[in-house]
Image 1 (spheres, rainbow, N blue to C red):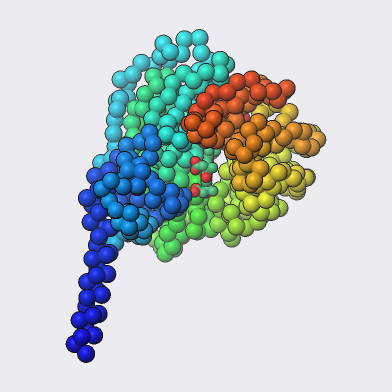
Image 2 (cartoon, rainbow, N blue to C red):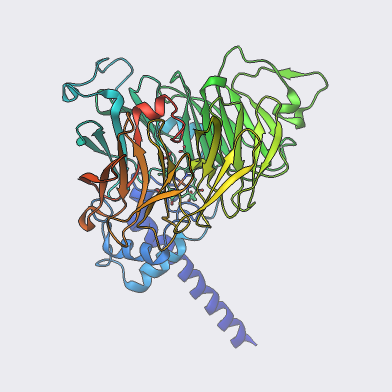
Length: 519
Ligand code: DHE
């Protein structure tokens, strides 16, 4: 009997030691860059939520051999193979306490590189003769940099390091001067495009979806997965308010799938991933008061109101929305949850669903676009699961045509001056192919496949619609580049080498909210 107890105790001690070992190794080798609590510091957060997109095999490779062009060094010379395996397994496990990111953490993270008013209010000398409205911002995921490209001369003017793993579209102020970036790790960076300087940064969350900026540049909204918050900042990245994202009864909290600026409505609109509600947050100081039930029912008092400014006004739905995009006048949004296989149209004024959309597969409405066809506005969206583009008449919300593509894709683009809309098939074996569709006949007119087996995706037009820039989504050493096409002849006119270029964003198309691009 005593022998058995001793064996059990011995096993427990060994198990405990095994469990403690990775934690000890982490504190010894990793904590100084990734934070003692794994929330990230100079290096990214190492929590299961932050590592969702990194395969364990790749994590093992990085911990052993380091990551090129970053400060992440390899540890194979100091930590044994089995220890690295244990360490990697450990960082994919939840931490002991649920991670918190409080208002004090947000405030303490704020960094000001150049105070407001300290940089000249005119474009730098490097921009002499450059059309500031035809600049592109290009996010490069290979070595986490951003390039500034002159859309007329098709040249890189500047390149600077970004935070680790930017995601979502950078957002511009309406004069095109400032650009706001969000990293998956919650860092929001404000970049002065005229002076080519990052002016301020703040960490608004631990796991962030995206950032939105008000039309007047005075307010910034950040949607988070972790914690369940929507953080409101001023245009200089000072925290104003954190909204805890809860259902109307205050019982279920939710991740924020995405938040966008609806400038004509002077509001931010957010999709919630876990609660079937849309939130609209007005940044108009004269916003109407809201019945308190629209803000938090759990404080419900008959006839009580709160001021509408910077408070959420809820639209209740029967299904959650993962993502959406707006009609050009911003009175409606078209959205879907990823699994629903159909979409819904929600009118933001009457605050309810007004139509269903027939969208098979996994529609990716954040990349949806609209255009005018035979006098009718139509919408189309890529599909992450099926090689099909559904084109829908926005007057009656009926499907006009389903266009087959070589495979599921991620992004779509058009331009008022071009007769083609472009989409990719990057979620399939045909990831190397761009498909062009005639926006009137809705026929496929071309497939471009310049580099077999290399991912080609995410296009953006120049300001005048004459050229299209597409990402050859490879490391620089493997031919990664922006390929520039003539939008009419479809001939390649130039290649700009880049390190895994992801998205690119044209100042003019963004600030004028061109129907053919994301807003
Ligand atoms: Fe994105 C935008 C959600 C995976 C590259 N992506 C967006 C937006 C949302 C979204 C809600 C709009 C925010 C904005 O622009 O402000 N993306 C999601 C997902 O839910 C998904 C499928 C899973 C996830 O892990 O988040 C996802 N996205 C990816 C990728 O794997 C991509 C291809 C590579 C990457 O860098 O992560 C990717 N997403 C992008 C890009 C945009 C984007 C380039 C901006 C598109 C634009 O042109 O505006």
